[in-house]
Amino acid sequence: PFPTAAGTRITLHLKEDCDEYTDEFKLREMLRRYSSFIGFPIKLWAEKTDYVQEVDPDAEPPAEGEEPKMKTVAKTSTDWELMNSQKPIWLRPPKEVNETEYTEFYKSTFRAYDEPLAKTHFSLEGQVEFKALLYIPSVVPFELNRDMFNEASKAIKLYVKRVFINDKFEELMPRWLTFVRGIVDSEDLPLNVGREILQKSKMLSVINKRLVRKSIDMFSEIEEQGEEEYLKFWNNFGKYLKVGIVEDADNKDALGKLCRFYSSKCEGKDGVTSLAKYIEGMKEDQKDIYYVTGDGRAAAERSPVLERLKALDYEVLFLTEPLDELMIQSLDSYDGKSLTDAAKGDLDLPVDEETKAKKEEATKDLEEVCDWLKSALTGKVTKVEVSTRLTDSPAALVQGAYGMSPTMQRYMKAQAVASGQEDMLNANMNQATMELNPDHPITRQLRTMVESSPDADATKNFGSLIYDTAALAGGYSIDDPAEFASRVTALMGGNLGVSAAAAPEEPSDEPPTEEVAAEIVE
Image (cartoon, rainbow, N blue to C red; front, side):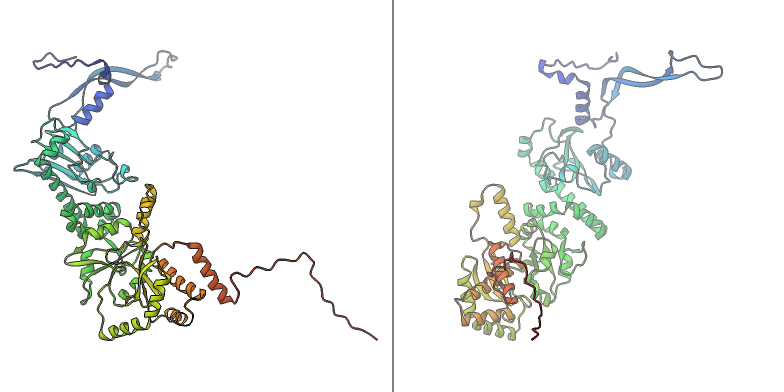
C-alpha cells in the first residue's frame, strides 16, 4: 500500500510479546495520544466500513412504474486515514484564534462538555522558551468530584516540539491547581525528557512559576467580571485556593485577596465578603480582622464570644471548615492587619476607664467563685476568669493564643480514629479558659451558692451545668453526654417541684372503687 514516490521507509520488527502493537485500535490510540499535533501528516493503513444501498436481488420484481426494493450492504475497504487532523492552536498568535476555536479545542482535547470559564494563551521567550494555553473549567471536572486531588486528573499536558510527552508531571503545576486544564509546548526540552531530567532542570522552575502566575491572573480577571460571576468560580474551586495559601507561601498574599468568607454583616445564603471589603468597613478604633470558627454558618453566628464584638459593631468572619482555619493561620495577616480568632486569647478591644475599674472590682468579687470553679472543673479548664467579651451569655470557653479551636479538635480526632491512632491524641486537647460574665444572674446565683454551701451537690451540679452549656454554645464536645442529661433532668425536676430520682407510680391491678352517696332513714 505504500506509494512508490521517493522517500524513506522504516520497518519495525516486534518482539513476540508485543503483538498488541499490530492492533489497529492500539495504534490509533497511540497516534491520537502522542502525535495529534505533529506538523506533517500521519496516516494509518486501516479498514474502513461503508454502508451503501443496493437493489435487493431476493425481493420480488417491482411493478411497472415502482422503484425496486433496496437493502443496506456493508462494504469493507482499506485505505490511508489521516490521524493528526487537529491543529495546534497554541502555536498561532492569540489575535488569530477566535473564541469558537478556543472552545472547540478545549472540549476535544480535554474531553469536556462544559464551556471554559476563562482562558489564557501566552508564550515566554528568552533563556527559556515555551508556549502555553490554559483553561479554567466552568464546572468541577468529573474525576475531582469525589477526590479533589485525584491522580487520574490530567491537568497539564506537556509537549516537546508538538510531540506529547506526559500529563502526569506534578512538577509542572502545584497540586492546588489540579483543576486547571492546559497545554505546555517547549522547544528546548529533549524528546526523551523524563522526571529526573525535569527535576534537575532550572527550566522547570521557570515554567512552573509562570504557569502559577498566569493562573492567578485568570482568577483575578474572573473577579473583575463581577461578584456574581466570580462566586460561580469560588463555589467550585475556592477550596483549591485555600490549599494554595497553605502550601504556596510565595503566592499566599495574592490568593488571600481572592478568598471569600461568610460574615456577620453579610445576609443571605450566598452573602460573602473579601478581606479587602472587610478592611474598607473597619471601625476607626479597630486594629485587627476578627474571625470565629464553627460547624456551619449558623453555629458560628451563635458563638457567645461574638457578643462584645457585635456590641462594638465590628464585623466578624465565619470559618466553617477545618481547611479554613489552616488557611487563615498560614495567611496570618492581610494588608497589615492581623487575622485574630475571636475565641482565643485577649482581643485587646477598646475599653474605657470605667469598664476597666468595673472589671477589676468584679475580679475581686468573683475570685472565690473562679477558684472554686477551677477546682471543680479540674481536667476540663486551665483557668477561670472574669470576661469582658460577654454581654448576654453567663459563660464562654476560649482558647489560648496557640490553642486549637473546637472545629479543628473534632477534625484531628476524626483523623486519629480513621488512622487507628486514638492513643496519640492529647488527653488535654479540650481544655480551655472559662470566662464568666459578672453581670449575668446565673453568675450571681453561683456566687451565692458557693458562699453558702460550696460542697453541696446542687452547687457542683450548677457549676458543671454552666460549663456544659458554655461548651455546647462554643462548639465543643461534651465528654459525658449522659451526665449532662442527668443534670438537666434534675434541674427540670427541681422546677416542677419533684425529685428527678422519684419512682413513677405503679398502676394497681384492683378495679377502681366507686363512691356512692347514701342517706340513712330512721
